[in-house]
Length: 98
Image 1 (tube, rainbow, N blue to C red):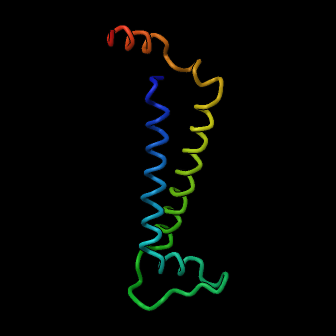
Image 2 (image 1 turned 180 degrees about the vertical axis):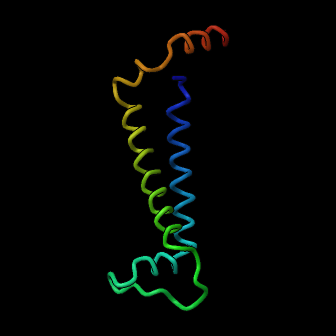
């Protein structure tokens, strides 16, 4: 695994979580409609908006995104992560820079 792969996975997960969170904020009426009947949430007046499936998909992507980014970050800080990195790739990169 190259050195940049953990950072790329963290970045992808963070962007996925950010985009789905923004989508949820822009569609708060659909979120309120999905959770109608709990905690006195009622959707406001206006157009119907996205379906419940789209809201649940956005919730799923949001949660998977932040959980994956934290999990990969914790794994990358662990002592086992350097053993997975290809040392030949690192040596060749250092020799090429010299």
